[in-house]
Length: 400
Ligand SMILES: Cc1ncc(COP(=O)(O)O)c(C=O)c1O
Image (cartoon, rainbow, N blue to C red; front, side, top):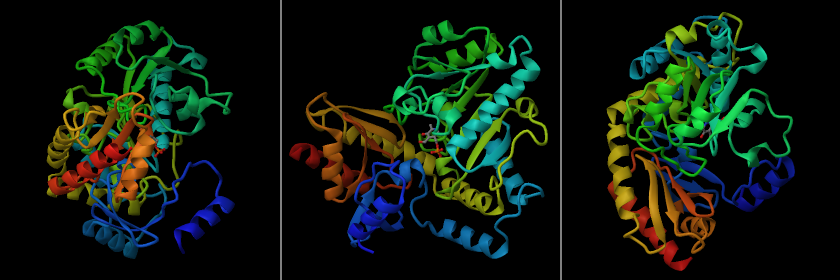
């Protein structure tokens, strides 16, 4: 099918929830993509921080083929060796927690929210069940289910979907004063992204996560870190909380967890996790043989290829070659590791126009707002590819 035919068929048969570009990729290899008309692109979006190890990595293909030839799914009615092995690896890589597996970021956050409330039913009997409040940050993004969209502190995602889920309050990201002001005796947890990606690539001031940790400890509340986008070495450490040395009580993962195969996970400190009892929570597909085998292969590739190190080095290089010295229209490079956004000077260029020009020149980037272009390439991107991408972006800025 040509791109034109795909666009026409999608318009007719697919619900109009996405503002899709008229681009259909049909092949990916490493950091490269090819569209339905045979054009080649350098991928600086990586399926929105999903393809950490790049497209069609041989180890991922091998894991998929090998597992598919054995057994793909049985259900959580039975033991799953790969699930136990993956939980052990994630636990050892993070803070010694126990895992619940699901299929997406929103589901991982749903699990975290339910777990925090179940924990509060045991440990915070001072809070009435109907009052158990969870604080989240303004400009956050936690998913699109009714509960996680309510947790998302952005009105634009709420409009039209009222009534929203009860039990959420919001504070200003980066302001410990505002978090303290909103922390009423009914609050049982604070949920936050270590870096707000969808909300503008906002990195909190140094020490903020520690202050939130201290606030939670002092008020017997849980700290939930949404590492759906920041986790799995995207920011240069296995999990972004490691930059600050601040451990959460609950952490959520998805996106890169299984290298492109749909998977989510909620990891919790063992004593918190044990608030769940059999029958409290479940997912038909969650943690099946297939997803776990691919996630285990993804972890292997990240370790064997030193992708955390490369994310740090290439992220620093992006900040250097696309910093304010590189072009008068660039205000700053935000983010950490290979989770970056170039912010343009206000009202000079439109990031969506820059995005279009980059794509025309063979570079896939993503405008997250009128003044910000997200750069989140596969973590095995090379110096030469960063230089190529920077050249295209600077050229697009000249033309925009
Ligand atoms: C921080 C964060 N949390 C949750 C989600 C939701 O993940 P999913 O789309 O897999 O449900 C996203 C998606 O962009 C995200 O960036």
